[in-house]
Length: 66
Image (cartoon, rainbow, N blue to C red; front, side, top):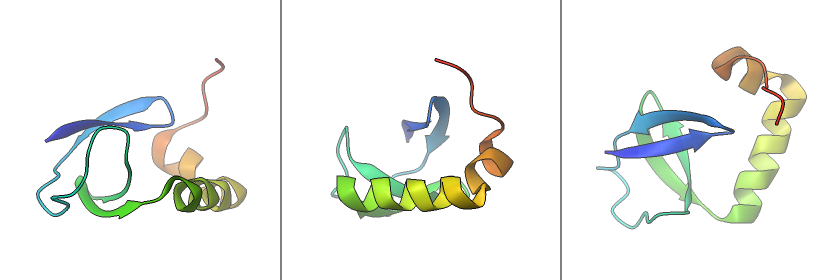
């Protein structure tokens, strides 16, 4: 198990399916399980696409000011 950061919101996720993951890696998390490790560029591109369609706000709530 690991504590993961979803844009400032922290949740626990199971890492059993991604043996190669290490601190600082980007992962796809689905229903509490890390299912894939991404490069930083893949992660940033995916996050931008999700922001564009509003999926992050629906899943995690509104962004909190820094």
